Image (tube, rainbow, N blue to C red):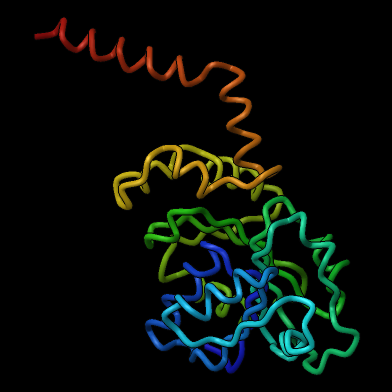
Length: 237
């Protein structure tokens, strides 16, 4: 795919994107440069991740190597975006940032990274079992090669859709914050509480949606609807 790729943030989604590429030898471990926010994450990847990728703690002198990579996957939490500063000297003039940050617009990305072309992507947690849904919105002046690279990041684990940016938030609400993620419970033998912890973050879009559902007593309504359907079904016997 490419000589070097930087991964800024390495949570469940980033790992689900990158690992199949490494498994299928589409990229080599020595060409993956990962930056994480904490020492705990750093040690966990070094100890437990099955591929021997390069990993650095953010803010370290070594971590600056990510700005030499032509392609970058931005997978931090949206509230951490302000903590990142683009290097003043960018060697490559055709840089690409692929962002999977919920709610962060292409316009904001281009303001934050003026030396990069930016792509905004919305994907969801079923990507971790190869059954994701991914929506892509292209920034300005994206080349065909950059489009193909972006699609290759997700095509092994997702169905891919291309949208104008104004549709991405709707796509996010339906796929990332919606009930489609319920398939993980069966696949990974998760409890509903474990699933909630996996797909939500403090102040994020999904936890916001769950608060509204709790406020509107949707859980109770769902239970009652199932009971009603079950009782009605019995009447047809």
